Amino acid sequence: MFHPPAWLSTEELEDELLHAIHANAGEADSRLTIIDEYFAGDDAFEPEPQHRQVLLWLLSLLSPRLADLLSCPPAE
Image 1 (cartoon, helix red, strand yellow):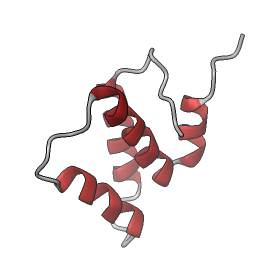
Image 2 (cartoon, rainbow, N blue to C red):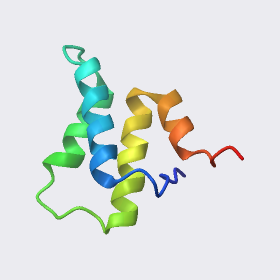
Image 3 (cartoon, one colour):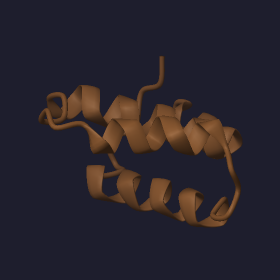
């Protein structure tokens, strides 16, 4: 389970996902289909905490290392 850091806003997570989508543009890929299906739904998004987890999971489909870095605890 991914746990997005509190210091990263939902909008910033969405921006990172969009950057990853653009970096993979033009590729016929099932990962992009999964992302499209999530955003194409007629239902409202999950409550904020779950939506943030889904955004980070979707990001992990395209950029797994970045998602791992974002979901790990901060270094001390």
